[in-house]
Amino acid sequence: MISKKVREFFVSLMEAKSEDTEVLYDNETEQYSGVFNETVINNFIGKGIIELVASDNGITTIILNGREDFISGFTAGVSEAKLGRDQYYADYNANPFAFSAGFEHFHHYNKKKYKDSDYFCHGFTDESNNE
Image (cartoon, rainbow, N blue to C red; front, top):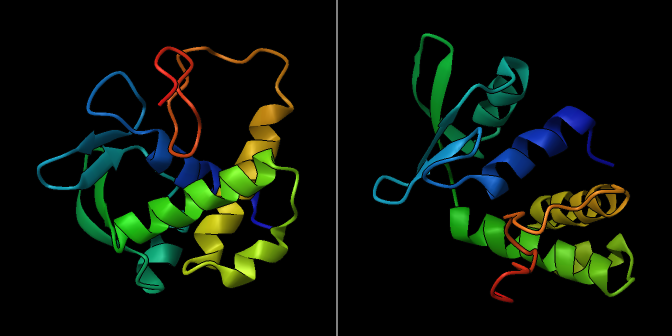
């Protein structure tokens, strides 16, 4: 099981857009910027999952190493959770951690009484265009 702080950190990356989100994503540089939990950041920098680009006035800029693989694993976790399967399938994914984060996020989000029809997150279907 992934801790709430860690899950929230990675979900914030998967929800990031170039505007109108707490964490911003720059398509050109593939950098994420926002206010992050410093302990979580330092832990994943130490593990080589993310790289610190800059930290200034409380805003931290990072790069998610292997971003495409992470997104793929996260999306697969969401998909398997939607199908009612269990986390056993994480063992067969190229990125089991990302799979588990996506899987747990789907279950956490699914418990919410109010679901935003404009919600954007990798692995979730956009209700407005079914993408």
